[in-house]
Amino acid sequence: MYSPQRDVYSKNGKVNRKAGKCIMKRTIITIGMLAALLFNILSISVYADETGMVSVQGLRLQYADDGSLQAFADVSLSDIQATGVDFELKYDNRYLTPSEFATNTPTREAALMMSENTAPFEAVLEKSKADHVFELKLSQILSNLVEVNLVPNPNLTKLGYITKVDAFAPEYKKLTALNIPDSNIQVVTMSFKVTDTETFLKLSGEELSNLLRVESDAHYVYVNSDKLEYFDDTPLNVQVSIDTEHIPAKPTPPPEPEEPTEQFNLTGVVAGWNPNQPFIMDIYSEQDGSEALVKTVKSTDADEEGNMLYGITSHTMLGYTEWAFSIPLDRGKEYTIRLSKLSHIDYIDVSFTAPETENELNFNTAAKGEGKEKQAIELIAGDINDDGLVTFSDRAEFMRFFNLQKPKELFGVEFNKNDLNGDGTVSFSDYDLLLQNYDKQY
Image 1 (cartoon, rainbow, N blue to C red):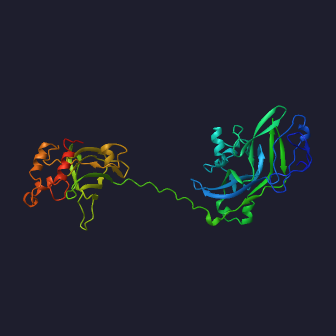
Image 2: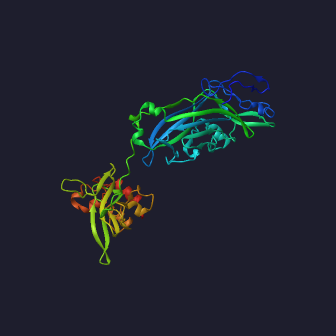
Image 3: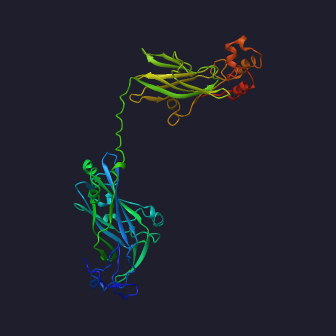
């Protein structure tokens, strides 16, 4: 370690013969081997004042995706003005090993175990069109210590915590430097994998505080291929605090995939008019070489206690009705579906193959294509004569009942066919619905 009494040159070239301080309390500024470099160093406008500090705080714990315990140590800077910060962080390799920040996999590459905190530098990164603040590749991992070398990206524009400093060696140079005046700025987070979790969590507070220790530290200034170092022989204040009562819970492993059942659920939504009339679904499948009706379900089907068997229906005051259905069907078959409702055009020939493993198939997707699963199948109201069209003949039939008084008791089903919205009358609201769907097709 160099003597604390050195000649420190200011920009005007005059010698300032007094001992400076840097990095931490009681930290001493010295310029090592200045005499050897004096012939080509004219001036350096870089300094580190007596309150300069680098602190390492940790350990923050979390469980990684693979269930291993990951420990983070945050590196912060305060009162720093230099082209680099250098220190050796010793770790207890009985419990910790450097790991990749993203995966907690053990690594010997220092750049992979560190993650920059870019938040304080967002403005300078955006203006410089750069993606990193520090040249982390200059750091390295040894058997039980990490040599941390925080050198700012030379392509960063002068802004915020980044400055440009003058150097002559012997030609004029503009160097990129850190300029963190008095804030405690967290710049890098280091990742360690906890190798013996059970023992680690039983360590005492004193034992935990000795897991990390700084061996040496410095501010320095690069000039050509050499660097002038400001050394401190007092270790950095490494703060380690772990509250084992607040370690995050270990992630629950994902549940085992369910074995395919013998059946799947056909789900979907169909809409129409008149809540008094049920939706009907006829389900066909091939049997003995020909298509046969295997099942018919209605939106009104219920068990003995009145619980709906195949989904729920809802309607508005105007009579618009929706049926959100869920119908169990056997696997290993191909199906064709026909949807119908009184005085609506049938929605026919929607075919699909039962899924082999999935427990659900969406009818709306099968009918309309991907991305349509939330769009209801809209049945077209107005097919009074059940010929698959809404035409003049439906209008003629409708006019026979239009505005008749108490015809329901007299005409029964015929009246219900013309009461399109199910409000108990055959009126202008039904006529308007008929005209809206005139000549309409799916």
